[in-house]
Image (cartoon, rainbow, N blue to C red):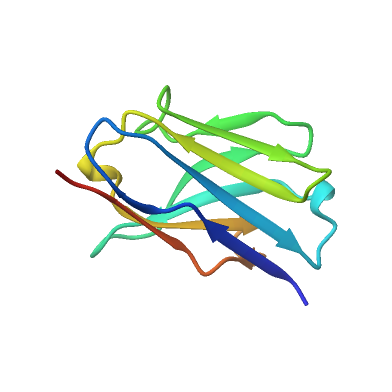
Length: 114
């Protein structure tokens, strides 16, 4: 049974930081490109960050320079370090393996508000 379980979301003030984690099980983690997506209320889900099997990362322009994606293949984990958070970063953040038709977590809520 494939499971992707996100954690680390919460309420943070503008300018603050959060670190999201995603624990994967039931898949050959090391062969999957891993992604973080987010969906804000009333908006479509958007791709935030990608890390390939070889550790190459890519980011949406809106988070470039503020967010860092990383992976630990030994632990089947992927992370999203989010710094200098803005109110527009408020969304449910989802971990994904295998693209749109692949595997998804249940999401973790991030709220940036004073």
